[in-house]
Amino acid sequence: MLMEVVLTLVVGFVGVWFVVFWSYYRHIKRVPSPRLWPIIGNAMEFTTTSEVLTVLDSLYKKLNTKTLRIHIGFRTLVQTKDYKFLEFLLSSQSIISKGIGYSFLHEWLGLGLLTSDGQKWRTHRKMITPTFHFKILEEFIDVFNSKGKIMIEKLQKEVGNKSFDVFPYVTLCALDIICETAMGTCVNAQNEESSLYAKCVKDMGRIIQQRGLNPIYHYKVIYQFTKLCQEEKAALKVLHGYTNSVISKRRAQLEAVAKSTQKTEDDIGQKKRTAFLDMLLQATINGVPLTDKEIREEVDTFMFEGHDTTAAGICYTLFNLANHPEVQQRAFEELKDIFGDDTERECSYQDLQEMKYLEMVVKETLRLYPSVPLYARMIKDDVTYNGMVLPKGMTIGIYAYGIQRDPDYFPNPEKFDPERFAPENYDGRQPYAYIPFSAGPRNCIGQKFAILEMKASVSKVLRHYKLKPATPTHHLQLAAESILKAVNGVKIAIEKQTY
Image 1: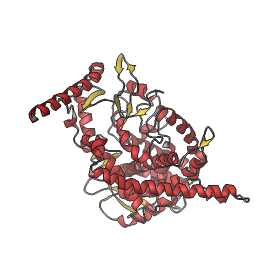
Image 2: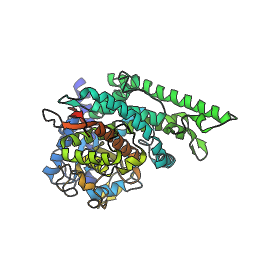
Image 3: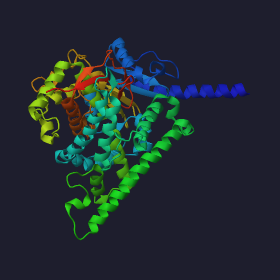
Image 4: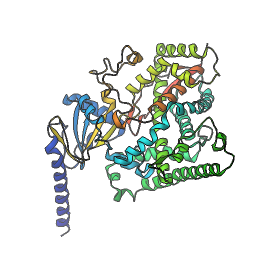
């Protein structure tokens, strides 16, 4: 009797899998795919995040294609680095829903700008866009300067060491910056490395990745009983509690000012700086203010998107400069032209605009090491591309890391060459081949903020330290997690800068 029940369940399970598999396969069967196994599909090809990029690159090469079909369990994914396909996807006004993996962020970010779609995304995008106007971004420069100064002081203890991982220093600096610019509050992550908030931000990044990697954790009915879920709940209690507290206090301050009979610009805080939170508290949609929950979702989204991604970009830029002394020297000479030999003068918004060569260095770094190497779109309604139906419910993977290292678009793609982005060499006529910030209607709204922060942080380091390759030579072991992560660290060496 028991064997009959088990057999029935197995047959039923296989039957459901086959129905789901066929519902997608019949539409996209002409897309090349590696060998499939029943039920598990291609799952055995992708066992760890550190293998994803290598496996994908080898599959594209082996199958001689720029678009792959991948099946993992009940899920079907079309993974592409084809320019025309990416142009179709990223320029679309209707294919704007994020892939199913983004649902793992819902408990933390709710339906903020990153995870929402439809009308809510459109109205919030329209509302938030003005907060990244250059006049507002200019107000954040003093935060970049003050937090960068702390990082420079912390790095002093590494002078003379043959090798150290720069990522822990940069990620704490980036966390300090994002907290102050997003919420107008200081978590002092660099000076208090035991900060509970900082720890919980780091924990959530790990938890989201572990859940994405293990198919068993994809199903909430199972996940809710796991130890990992309990860790997530504990971290979210701290993160949401902190953000809610800051919102409540700031709203009370603004209301007190509104009732005051003597209002001055300084009444609502420092005149020279308005946090992202302040702008959200004063924003309305059709005349209706945002709820505290909506504000928390957007602040938490800004925290998530603007922390590790920017930190990764800064680290890989420092790594490239350390390993390409001729590029570093040219970037340093540019800084000398701007600042002279005054290492203590804080940079201004105008100074950052003048760092043309350093911006080329940052852009070339993001080409080789895009902070988010893979992202995805969900097809909400059947659409046709190139005579092929993309069925409702299917996920399309966008392989930014792949197309940005494709020789069809970037000759000698493995070479670090900032000159690619010199005005005379890069005309932007293929905007969907360079997509570290995505492209089209769902491009990264904070990309100008990120570039400014990267330039401010890197220039601060270069003005104080000369970067050297790690000894012994360090080769990055890249993993496709929520960011492009070096699992063996981003190791360099530094010595005092000479003028």
